Image 1 (cartoon, helix red, strand yellow):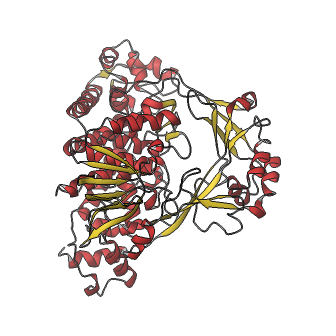
Image 2 (cartoon, rainbow, N blue to C red):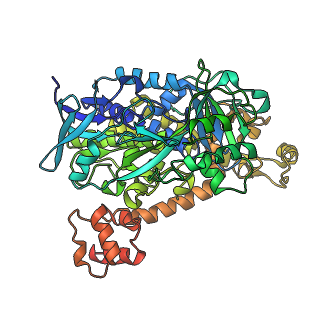
Image 3 (cartoon, rainbow, N blue to C red):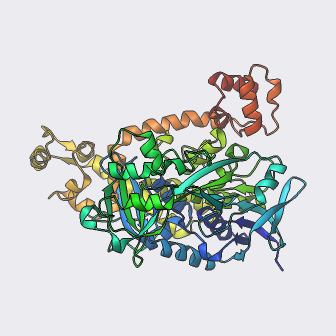
Length: 620
């Protein structure tokens, strides 16, 4: 019934969709197996993409030739660039998405992608021969053969949903859990664990009083995620902000004795940076209020997502408490919030390609690796899909360094350090974040995506033009000088000191108070010159000028670290014969099997002295 596939992707969430699209667009014959064709790319939690550091990931996915940025642009209802008051390394794009349109657009994209087949079924088992995966078995008894398998099971592996004292199996409310895979992987020698996440109630927006809330509109000039010609957002829907209060907290406390989190029924660790509302009240007892973001779920629906009110308390307690929030006095709930526990596999069992150490051609991506968030899942799916294709066709593995992308930071963190709680990306995790900005993801990664066959010639040409424009603008700013009489009026109006002698515009633009738009408006040859370029090119040039010193400093740091990255460790290196290594170091190195000395240096438990010892043994 089935042909033999190059790549089989299990699960059609954000990781599975990117994995299937990537492998197919690179030329592999792909089968996407999902339990429900109607929930492909479902936004299980909040209807939004991007955010702090997450927005950088979406732009990186797009720059490489992935789909998440394009689909976000086509289905967004609001766009905001976060952290504009900070330096550009912190700027992070975020959008509110139309939940139904997002899933629909992803399905349409996959259906229109040559080489992607679909099968609605549950994968119960992987087929392994001689230490290599060769296919899957499904609940219908089908055996489907493939050269590589990507598991992106999300929260479905032995998923258990909690609402108050009730619990029942499921990967999402209304959808059954997946069984069999965990048990088989453990029998094959894999280590597993349990994690927990949660979601808030959904309410009827027609029953809310928005006059009692603070409006949060989108940007006046909304940008987008994709570097392609996706449509610009012309109209937007506002979000709203309100707050809990002592009355809300008191009502929630009445359910604490039935809370699965407080009574110990939930064993898995939840996300530290997205705690449930009962956890916030318990941990921050001195706070008399907490922020609630009221987020519409789409253009046509009245359903509203109550961000900040994630909970697994009994539904009657949720209902009473939510109606004590300003603006929610007459709220009707569509469904209660709940917590969900699920199996994951510590990612130290993977290589940097996301292939497992124990089974060849078997890849894990998304929440199965202990991460949280659509963006973190999507980028893992993209990388797993790329490498599954590479393996299936005996091609070179594709790995991104920490200095090349947030995606590289995320995977390097997971593989070398592991995680004991749901991993979420932050800008602070990237030591080279001045280099890894959202505005230059195309300059960093599109040539790599083009080399893989994911980014087309038009994308590469646009990047080359952008790079050339940047160099042209910066060179002109360095070359053209301005007389004090022609610029001091502007400088004084901006509250910055006047100049006394002729200066190049490059030096003036380094001042924090001066933007390139100010120079563009001058009655001077530089104004006419700058007006020849688009907004993106001008912003890129301004960042280059203002942050040149920081950029050069980070480049030197990268060069220093790359010396360690260039020192490869043979795959069967015998760490036990290096007696000078600490016992902990030997254990970690044997388990993770780093490819380079640089990777070894980032493993938790491997000290700088251990790295020096290895350097000697490697012949340095």
